[in-house]
Structure formats: structure tokens, C-alpha cells
Length: 316
Length: 189
Image (cartoon, rainbow over all chains, first blue to last red; front, side, top):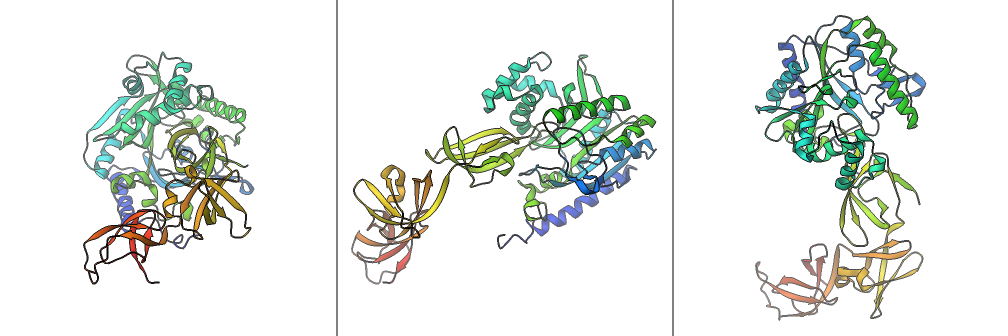
């Protein structure tokens, strides 16, 4: 331990700004009649997404939640109406300038909202917190075409892999189609987004639907009805037109778990309570999760999450 | 040698990449909203000094490099090789001029230096941050001229040339910061 390890990495002014931002966000939702809720941080079933690893408390048969999504959807199914939550979320192995394994998340759900409605509300929140800027919407595939002159709906996985290898040196053979897309998008496109505007990217490849509905874009091509928000090249929020079909959800859980098994990852239990709630009926809704620490970082013009966290994991 | 996963990459960790020992300078975790995470890593190739940028899939690993920074006493130069000695074991190592590089102009016999060993052989040499060396050649000192401002070049016993204040003269010992090559102060002998 070094001499200064007991000290916070954030300036006291940043901690004051955090308290201020919490109040601003709560006021934003209060004005709009969205109810603040709390759900368990110790969850009985974590996400199945193979790209997200929960911390497991083996002896307690509990997992530190990676997002409050499942529990909040159970509240929606129980008739809560519009809800939001400010809470901690935990993800194993995610550590860096813009990641901390323990972070604050702002997540909210809007029954009756379309994805467009929710994107508009995200734009309003960003303008309220970070200042006025134009809110620009993009199609995922259109950005890909602009950057690489490739039609994402037609291009072969091998061609994407070759491009990823050529640009970033990761062997094409070790990348599947989605990995190649993610590598190219995160390295070549994301850094350019959200410059002088708030960029909202929607209509993701259908293979990246997670818990969003699949639908059709304006040209009738199959897409995942979700969006991500980018500010100063930083991914800030991830929103879905929420999947409502319990049996479809179950089959997505199963294919996630199958992939986990193939890769030798932990295979956690499926969230049966969420499946039961969805079978009972989740109202049509759109929901979004926003990184609260990143929002604060952007508000303060900080380069590193450590500047806005009292004690990042290295000093926890 | 151990292998290290991308989540263990820290600044200063020594790993092998494309057959060369490298020191990690920076490791940035990049994760798309959904899907596979990546690490964008900056490394210095310790053989060439060049900085490389590489992207890895998170969870991939690299073999550790058998590279160790060791404090050693500089003994002498035999015209071809520079000789160093580990003070605890008296083990001696020789390094050629290419390995010693710019450090040569600061090496005084019996001073300590940091020798980077790769598979047991010197790969690079760094002098101490501060060294005290005698002025062997400079214009005559202007006695009493301790006012600030003027400097003049002075050649030191190891061959380095630094700017020193006007009042110093040959035979005096000065303290120099080897990282910047700047004069710090006069050392009373």
C-alpha cells in the first residue's frame, strides 16, 4: 500500500457535484411523475448475457446484481407504472478509465413509451444535465456504411473479420461476426460520436437484441429495437423497446446459457421469477440504463472515472 | 515464465510480444454496450524502444518476459564493453555500447545504475536520476558572479556537456538531473 492509498481519488468538489447531480436527476423524474424504487442488490439470478460476469456469493446463493433490470420488470408487471432507480451495479473484470467493477447506474422504464419517445426523453435529460446540444439520431448500419462503405445486412462474417484483423491486428479466425462488428464499432466509430451533439444510435444488428424486441427498420430489414447514447465518444446509455414475450425471453436465456457452457463460463440459474412475471404480463414499455458515474464525469469534463469516484476499486 | 491475462496488465508489467520483451505503458478496457470486451494496450518494445499499440480480446493472455531491473555498480569500460557488478552477489555483467546507449555519458565508476536484465543479459541501462560529476573543461569562472542569469557549457568527467552558472570553474563538482540533463547545484567537496 502506498502512503496516499487511504485518500479519495476524487476532489471534494467532484463529490459535491455528485450530490448535486443526484438531486438534479431525482427532480427531473419527480417533475415527470416517475416513481423512484429500490430493488435487491443481492439477486437470486444474475443476467445470462455471456459478455457480463456477475460476482457470485457462493455460500449465500446470491449474486451482486449487474443491473436492476430483472427486478424492475417484475415491478412493472405488478402494475408500478413508470419507475426509475439510482443504484449500484457490479460487474466482474470491468476495470479501466471508464469502468469500475462497482458503479452507479440510473435505470428507468416508461410504460406506453415507444423507443422514439424514450430517446427523446434521454435527449432532454442530457440537455438538462450536460447543457443544450442538438440530439442526432443514427441507424447503426448507416454509421457502418459511412465508416467502412459496407452494407452490414449483406456483408459476410469473413469479410468483417478480415477488416477487423487488418485494422486492429486481432486474428480474423478468433472473431465471430458479432465480435468483429463490436471491435470495429467500438474502435473506429464510437470515438467520433457525441462530438458537439448527443448521438443516439438505434436499430442494432438483430443478433445483439439482448432483452430488446426485434423488429423492422424503415427498409423492412430485421433489427434489434434498441439504442445507445454517446457523448464525447463515450457510451453513456443503453435503451430497449422491451421484449414482452416470456417464451421468447426463455429461449434467449437458454441460448445465452448454451453459449456460456460452450465457452466454459459460469452457468447461473435462469431468473424464474422474471419469467413468471413476464408470463403474467409486462406492459408494453421502453427502458434505459445510464452510467451515472460517466454522466458525472462528462459533466465535469473528467477524463477518468477515478476523478468522480471517492474510492475506485484499487482503493476500495 | 508465468502468463498474464489482459485484466492483469498493469503499467510496468513485462511481457513477450512477437518474440520481443515489452513493458506495458497503458491498458485501456474497451467494452461495447453489449458483447465482447477488448483491451487497447500500449507497450514499449524494450529492445527497440518503440511504442506499440495493440488490441486484445479481454481475457487473452501474454507470456511474461524474464526482465528484471537490477541495481548494479558500474565498474569500468574496457574500450568495448561496460562492466557492471551486482553488489550483493558480486556477479558481473558486461553490456555493449548499443545497450548502454545515452546512459554512457552519465556513468562514473563506482556509481550505481539500473541495469535491465533480459534472460539474465543486460538489455538496457539507466543512470541514477541524479549524479555528481566533476567539471573537466569550461571557460574560466567569474569569481563573485553569483547573480542569476548567465550560463556556459561545461564538460564533465564522463563526457556529458551541461549548462552551468558562470561562477563555476574546472575541478568543481556539480549535481545533474540525468533525465533532463539540467544542472542542479554545486557540490561542496
